[in-house]
Image 1 (cartoon, rainbow, N blue to C red):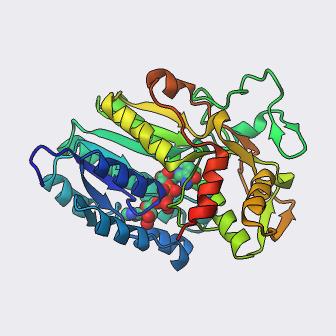
Image 2 (cartoon, protein in one colour):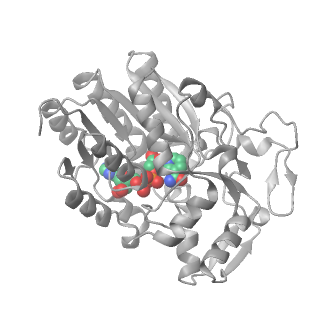
Image 3 (cartoon, rainbow, N blue to C red):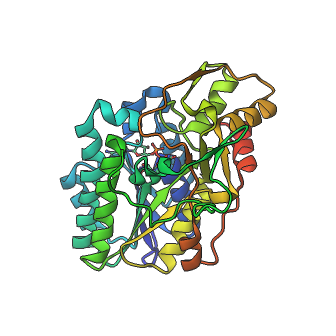
Amino acid sequence: MGFNMKKALITGSGGLIGSEAVKFFVEKGFEVFGIDNDMRAYFFGEESSTTWKVNELKEKFKSYHHLNIDIRNKEELEKLFKEQQFDLIIHTAAQPSHDWAAKEPFTDFSVNAQGTLNLLELMRLHSPNSVFIFTSTNKVYGDKPNEIEFEELETRYEVPSGHIYTNGIDETMSIDQSKHSIFGASKVAADILVQEYGRYFGLNTVAFRGGCLTGPNHSGAQQHGFLAYLVKAVNQQIPYTIFGYKGKQVRDNIHSFDLVNAFYHFYQNPRQGEVYNMGGSRHSNISMIEAIEKIENITGKKAKISFSNQPRSGDHIWYISDVSKFKQHYPEWACTYNIDQIIEEICIKGHK
Ligand SMILES: NC(=O)c1ccc[n+]([C@@H]2O[C@H](COP(=O)([O-])OP(=O)(O)OC[C@H]3O[C@@H](n4cnc5c(N)ncnc54)[C@H](O)[C@@H]3O)[C@@H](O)[C@H]2O)c1
């Protein structure tokens, strides 16, 4: 590879966001080192394995190098950091599900918190001038957003008009004293560590607190990746249960391309220890029952839905990200996909 090629390290490179980031940065001329040990198959079963995507990346991109490393393995990671100086580190590898985390809290914490610390510390020691981008989550706010008094409309919950969160939830919401789930707690630990490596050590770090992240590369599992899984369920006529809130719970959805494009804007003009809420915002959001109707219309198939009164523990009733802080810092960035385009793309291209 050329000597002046920029080098990027992308963890979770077989996943939804990681694989989009590989493509994006290879196309920008980076030499990309991807880490993924297919732990998603361990979390959610073989049908959620990301090996298909890794194989595709290896075949397609000459400047992509795959490394089958577990991010919990600091010694293996250190070998890599001693060999390569990175300009950019995008850390997306994670145990990403609330429900799963409760089964194995130690595994969840070791991947999400310890794995992030391993990468931050190795960056500090070996690539201190790089930019470290972490995919955090809106679950760092726990179920605090549920304290808002929502209005119940025909197909969704909404904030009353004129409410302070009309444009979505911003970064001033407290991450303290609410129910996060075990997953949310391990992500809080990682999010705060990312901030400290910026604030305390003066490195270029950022945590993007994502709403629902979607796109055609998601290896859909019932416990993670709701739109991709919903499309799969409707297409294959798999029964689907909606937990709580009568299906009126609202999520904002951002396409993986728009998120990775935000990473690129940050990389070009980095800051230290920043946090941004990042999601589809008012531009792209939907309730469960609204999503089902759209998918039924596109596929021409009727969903096999049942409703349970019991919400998932700590689940948000309504979450829309206010992305105005990011837009203020990076005015040239904007979401290019809206919810209809996202759903159509998943329905047409499908996923694995
Ligand atoms: N998808 C969402 O809706 C969403 C929302 C908010 C935040 N996030 C965060 O964004 C990030 C990316 O999410 P995604 O949807 O792309 O997830 P994903 O599950 O599609 O991808 C994560 C990848 O990391 C790999 N991985 C897991 N543990 C690993 C380990 N110990 N070592 C090496 N590789 C490992 C998995 O095999 C998988 O390929 C995660 O940090 C997640 O918490 C996701």
